[in-house]
Length: 492
Image (cartoon, rainbow, N blue to C red; front, side):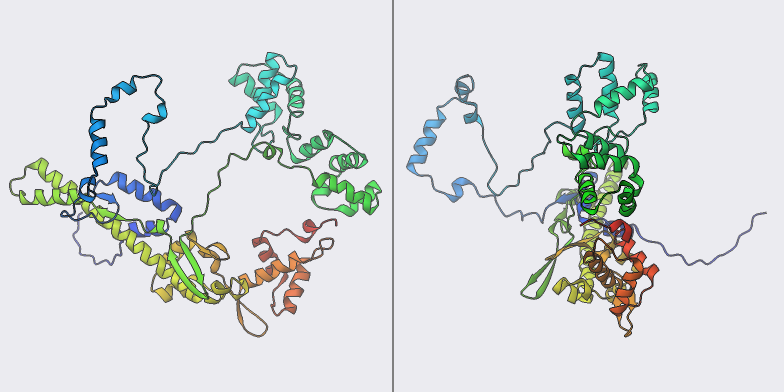
């Protein structure tokens, strides 16, 4: 049975403009240019550049600005009788004299870069022809090389490659035959290529060493029999097993430490591209006075198309006599103009929000930005900045998580300036980042033969007035990506 009833609800919804602003806020500078380009392509009512010049402004011509001399007039008269086809048909006429460069000295020219050279895999394939291999064996070698990554390691086991060759390439082979060809590939340059793991890679390099000595053989023995102990740096155990004195053991380990764990990097750089950091803000220190500016790429010049505005105005005058197609055209033009205005407003609001948030962070952490000393960083959470600028915490989070600032002492993510507080024995509130900085300095200055344990680091921090438990020290050490004491041990 149907019923009618009245209900009262309170809903909070974001407008399309607010959603667009939130999305633009979290876009970093590196991606903003692409986002604007996409909007320009999808919205013809949006144009790049500043305001259009007034209609009464006329373009100045050569004749308006400069009076022709008699010599120039005579030269112009002579050139009128010249037929350019006489020169274009002449095969002996130098090509460079028919070229023209219409770019001014201040005009930006964008060229598409391209890379040239031999890749790591091509370098390996070229060496196949230097070996006495049958056509069938050459196919196997190429397949093995195709499964080697940029670091030089074989990424697929031999059994799987045997199946791959049979099913995908209809090539029959055996595990023994493929192992034999793999041994040939492992003999290629650079030494260590084609290894299945780090242990095999290092042993191959030692065996291919040009001038092997006693310590080379000892190093092979260490890697073959005590690789697990070596990775865990149980040097005392290895030294006792091999019955070596300190000097002999040091020279043996020295042989291993000078090997290349990534042989592929010796031929060509990795194919992985590195993303350059483009700062959103730039901070200058002019004689002790801090000046904050927004990166110019964050402030693009956009305008609403004058042609579309005039088109809508023309449609509006004949609105009464407009048919269905004209009404649809009016609606389309109006939607595009509104979208262009919203986008321009969103970009402006984005700039204002970024400057407001960064200005508040700069004011809050003024001592740090003036000196660059990390121990001057105050405890700061998102709520502190949100209260200062009058914005929601989520907005501050969007800005801090993806924006960078360039300072005289480096480029940093805004998120890195936020940290929890920690109380010292005197009751003073300090930033956890300050504690991490002191912890890092203690580890950098430690005796590498006897690295400081987490318990010892906790004692040192306690002596400095920071009452921190060992578990907290371990957590901060892991956040700094510093290994445990045993793995920091070195032979001096």
